[in-house]
Length: 231
Image 1 (cartoon, rainbow, N blue to C red):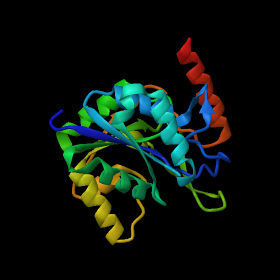
Image 2 (cartoon, helix red, strand yellow; image 1 turned 180 degrees about the vertical axis):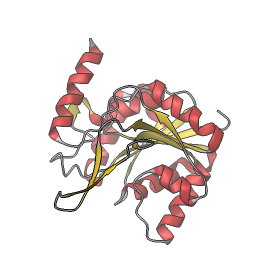
Image 3 (spheres, rainbow, N blue to C red; image 1 turned 60 degrees about the horizontal axis):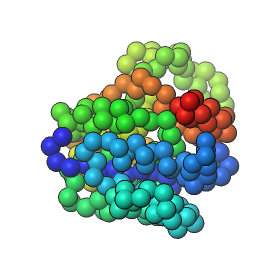
Image 4 (cartoon, helix red, strand yellow; image 1 turned 90 degrees about the vertical axis):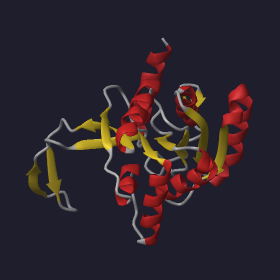
């Protein structure tokens, strides 16, 4: 990879659908954010990881990093995230500074992500300036109204479900986020920011479990997968 990379681990979500903060809650014996931190720190080319958390857990998260990561702790900084996802990404970019060429953005709630997937997405970004893990739609897809009444059947060919990690050239990501802020836009992923800055991203097919913990049943499934990984 030309130029260094820094990572932003997003763990500042409110956990409304789950019912509690996810970042520091233990799953399979370790805090949720530990899993994303581990794979990011092991990925080639990533020099620093900024973890965005809620203000009420920042001290606990920083203490955990200091006590459990040994010498690697110096490569990690824990900060308070913003109100929206894009705000947290922006705060992370500020901390990473101008010394990194690539920003690797990952959801801490995806506890099953592997080093291999992160490195594939980094490689995918090199050619075009932005890339993301994604998964081809395999289910039948229908459009419905707000009450659940079906409107039409959609052609699933060419449709993908977006995941993380997502990797964007840092200056491109900054430009896209600045435009979104200026125009009052809410973005749900980093490739949308790249597109606002004129860069079309590349999708890297995720061919391994990459579940995002959102509701209690996700938690149970992720914990079962993590248990299998330990065996």
